[in-house]
Amino acid sequence: MPLGDPELYFDLGSPYAYLAVARAEKVLGGAPVLRPVLLGAIFRARGFGSWSLTSQRERRMREIEERAASYGLPPLRWPPAWPPDGLVAMRAALWAEEQGALAHFVDAVYRHEFAYGEDISGVERLSSIADELGLPGRELESAVRSQAIKDRLRRLTDEAWGRGVRGVPTLAIGSTLVYGDDQLEQAPLILRGG
Image 1 (cartoon, rainbow, N blue to C red):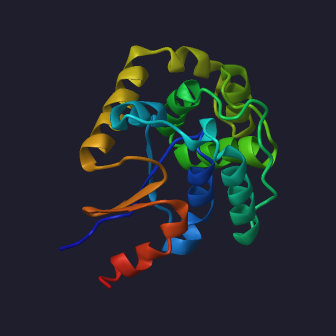
Image 2 (cartoon, rainbow, N blue to C red):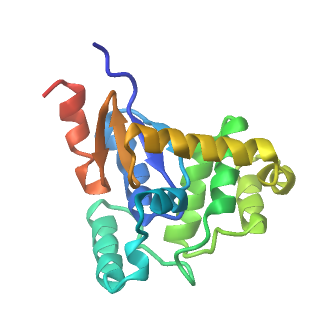
């Protein structure tokens, strides 16, 4: 039975998802289908939140910096007041998908957030990033307030939860879910049936 294209669930506020998205194409031998979800809603559904608000924060931040370096990514720079409220950014990702530019937008937002250390929670910054990509950034503010995009993000997140996604990054290969950027190398084995 064919497994289909790998699908990578992400949230733009997640540094672990950044690490996975940044290297997924190389590890998988092709670009995965990106699946936007709202991690905050997943936190609420599972009944506990992010390590970023616990005593693990400093240790995990250093670990992520070390992983980024080991993967050959630019030195990781944390935005001020990280983690941001990612709701607007995730709605903006859905708008970018409607423009046919989801992967480019996600790459650019992650670069601004974790390579340049910028706050990506505001519509002005996201509009500017869209403009850099040749997208009509002036349309972004009304788009992220549209009921259609709000409803779609809620639906996609609910569908991910129903599929078993409990955090990001999660790579789905058929019915198999692989959680964590450090588990990405399992994917080629699954795809080969090993």
